Amino acid sequence: MGAGNTRAQGWGLMNMSARYLICFAVIVATLAPAVGRLEAQDQSSARRLSAFEARQEKINAWTVGIAGGLIEGAPLRLAAEMARVVDDGTNLHVLPIVTRGPTENVNSLLYLRGVDLAVINTDVLDEYRIQMPDIGRHVVYLLNLFPSELHVFVRPEIRNLEDLAGKKVNFNTLGTAASYSGPLIFSRLGIDVEKMFVPHPSALQQMRRGDIAAVVFVTSKPVEIFLREKWEPGFKFLPVPYDSRFEDYYLPASLNAVEYPALITAGERIPTISVPTVLVAYNWPVGSNRFQRVARFTEYLFSRIDRLQAPGFDAKWKTVNLGATVPGLSRFAAAQAWLDRQVHKAQTKE
Figure 1 (cartoon, helix red, strand yellow):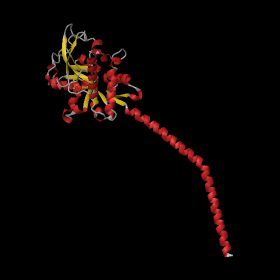
Figure 2 (figure 1 turned 60 degrees about the vertical axis):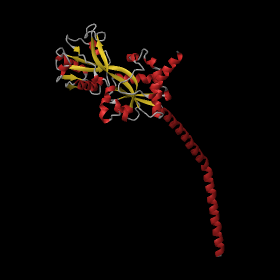
Figure 3 (figure 1 turned 120 degrees about the horizontal axis):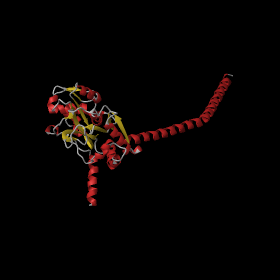
Figure 4 (figure 1 turned 90 degrees about the vertical axis):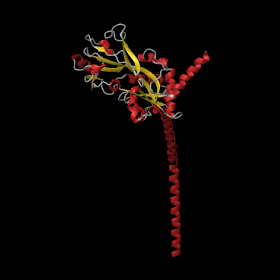
């Protein structure tokens, strides 16, 4: 009887195991399509993600960032116009970037991720002579955009630059070209003035009252406020001679009666200096992705420069000379190669 019970229990256990196996098989059969669908969905999601990531990679591989400057300044406007002309969808995506000003753009170019190009005034490189004496190995130029002429506008009692020693001189707000280049130029001239950094319209009103002796503009001529406003006799621009003190970053320039008929007599030319405003790039290793981005940008920009010189764009583009050099800097290799090809084409036609 004990043996019979044992056999019965054994058959019972076997029957239970069989039932469990049958139930498991039913569950597997039921879940298999669902699992298959989930696996298919996962594979589909993976493919979609892969396509999304591939598009991300493609766009970012050909995106170029340009450090422009203050939102109200000419450099940012020129950067935006370049973007309009050279932008080519996923083949070249150009991002003009609002910054603290052209004097800060070298820092953006050297240290900020996503910045490949910058609009700067050449004399800002003077700041790096001590901390980075090999700055020319890191920064190269594509294009000399336009000159920013120095305007030293003074009250009637001021006869020459030396008369400004110890007096209040305004250099516009911090971050502007005048706020950097102006004090640097006066330092090179050896004239110590009481520097002020207030908006020029406010400073000009103080100048009328005699509270300020001079205002210094560093911008492309003509400056509209000198054409629009009426000035009492004696208000004038001072001459600034170009000599060896300015040969590293500056160029000779002049102001004349055609540009400022109310302030300069017919036939008179007032010598001054200009600060080149240039488009520069970080000197990426040749063949690197970042080099290739800037090279493609250069190809598009140089070959489409005529579009920028058409109506609807800043008039400064009409004076741009692709072959113009920049004091103190070397040209970007791809830009020089483009110019060399044009010379070769011209020679071949001859």
